[in-house]
Image (cartoon, rainbow, N blue to C red; front, side, top):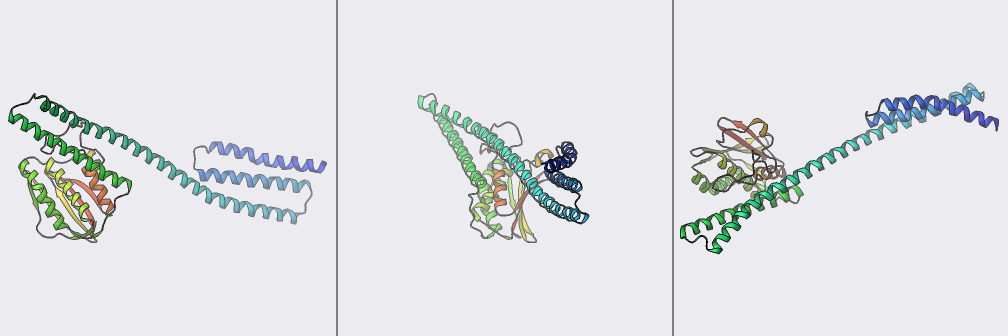
Length: 337
């Protein structure tokens, strides 16, 4: 029993002699990387075992050869343990960083979702209040003359169209964000898509006094889904026409750049402030804090059109960017040719 007590005391003394400085070192490293903490912890453990073994070996008068064997065994096992610990530590650190990034991403998405719900609620509540007021005025006979009744009917139709467009944009955006968008990829001529979109946008452009000019030649074919690409071009054209003043020009050009086809829509909006260039594709961003609909023929947008453009382009494995040019800005879309 005396020998056992001596062994226990010597092993404990050796372990404490190493563990206490190791504990102080770990406290000093608080806030550093997980990998470093695991390395120090394993190193302290191995050195504590080694100190206990050496101390007990000295007390038991073990031969030098046997002591060398013990040190080699403990050292080799410790080296393997530290190596495995470092590998696991890096994995834990990477997992921790990924988990933290995922949590931050979820918080950003949740904040964006709440903001979007608030904005859309406002955008729907305002026209609904107007529709109700006009409907009650017509129902109660407050408005009787033909001209005013006709104007009320026209405004009801405009507001209903604007709300239908907003709901349609919300549905498209939800498909993109939920990953349920399915593309039927085929060879699509950008020239045909642009031609159809320009023809559809001409009535609105004419009403606003805006000229729309598209190149006749040089259009490449790209790999994409025609309905979604048509929506991309239509959204960009509608945005350009809305922000171009009367007697201004919106131009559409295209071409090929290596393995990518591209098209660009250039407007006469006067340019976008530099701080806002990186935000124009954000959901519900309008370039102003106010959510009041613009005084345009189409009632303004819900700030979802450019977000849909980015989502659809990225679904095609392409990219979209905006730059300021003289007198306006230029939206360019690149798609696999």
